[in-house]
Image (cartoon, rainbow, N blue to C red; front, side, top):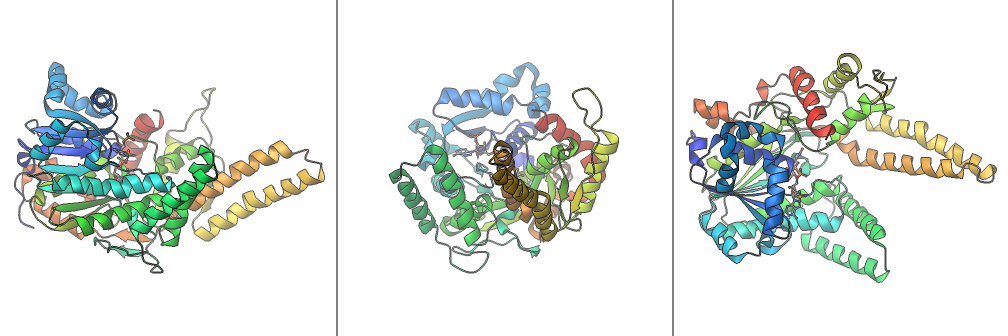
Length: 493
Ligand SMILES: NC(=O)c1ccc[n+]([C@@H]2O[C@H](COP(=O)([O-])OP(=O)(O)OC[C@H]3O[C@@H](n4cnc5c(N)ncnc54)[C@H](OP(=O)(O)O)[C@@H]3O)[C@@H](O)[C@H]2O)c1
């Protein structure tokens, strides 16, 4: 890859359509563009609402009103509101609809005529999402964005944000290569997206015919998603539908310049706009909090496995660089954005830092202000150990309580029911997360490295658009940036 034209300069007087900007990643993208290129022409932000007034409200409350925009607000001072209204157009819509659900025909024409880049980040990221919802958003949503892109007369690049874990549970080096349409991860059956849509439709018809309640319908749709994902070799509905989204885009893109970004586990900002910003209560952080509150009786994670973490600002920097680098290149390109190849960190080190942070340096305090002592817990380093632990620590005692309950004429009925519910849920969560707790893959990032080298040739860009994970010192980042950031911005909120 040759030297890139100046990245920030390439955004001057350009317009970008962004989906998913009330979410974690796209919000950072919007902030970055507005901060480094105040002369960007316009950002059209597609927000999931019915009308322009609600779009404006969500823009104010859930995008620019966030702490993330603090630096930009300081930069523009009193002119911040006029800067935002000049540069940002909130657009009411929904990716599950054709034309992205944009009903204002004048606005639609304006966007088609004006947009130079599209960044599609909207998705449902719930591992066990209802299958109908996940197909609608992650698969048909991607198709609608592509169809929309085809109508944009000046379009230079379509960035589609996927996930590295669309690769499933593959061990070893996972290459930055596209999915083939119909490919499955277990090679058993071929995958037919139309058939998946029909299965969902039929499933819903059956549920409605049976007059299923809303809760029953939700549960059935969730179970259907997990069942279809596992049938084809994916561990959950989220990554399965993200993989299908990629397949559909690859097959239908014609000559749209398509770049697929596959981030790994996105963590708090490393440097920009300030270190430690994060939003949303994410898996790693949920484990951390449970740990800090001494609620965990075990810590499950392969100690030798590589935990692929990538700070959010680095993901965004790579997205902006890729968007400019691939402008008008009528090819599909894939980037895996992670750290497992270039700067791996093992599960044992993550465990050590979390332990040190919460049990020695910064213990949580209880209601009386006393430091919470981390009690002894089991460290489970393999799937087998986790399953054995679940059986002996939870399932067998539950069985015992069941027998006692029956023998005592249901004297322990309430306790049994409650424990049964909790243990079932824990087992469900463990099954859902197990593939990621003992993940044995390493994400190749050769393409990303080439992009980095191209960015590096311009000293200003190298600094403004840093996504060199080799510069991360994990102990410092986790202990001084990510954990405090997650506690301040994600967990407390
Ligand atoms: N965060 C990570 O660790 C991570 C890792 C790898 C890949 N990714 C990928 O990165 C992208 C962004 O993730 P994120 O963490 O920012 O997710 P997020 O915080 O859950 O945000 C998702 C965004 O998508 C929007 N959205 C969902 N359904 C929509 C619809 N039907 N129409 C329009 N907008 C819709 C949401 O809008 P509402 O506010 O209306 O719900 C929200 O703005 C996703 O594609 C995800 O797969 C994320």
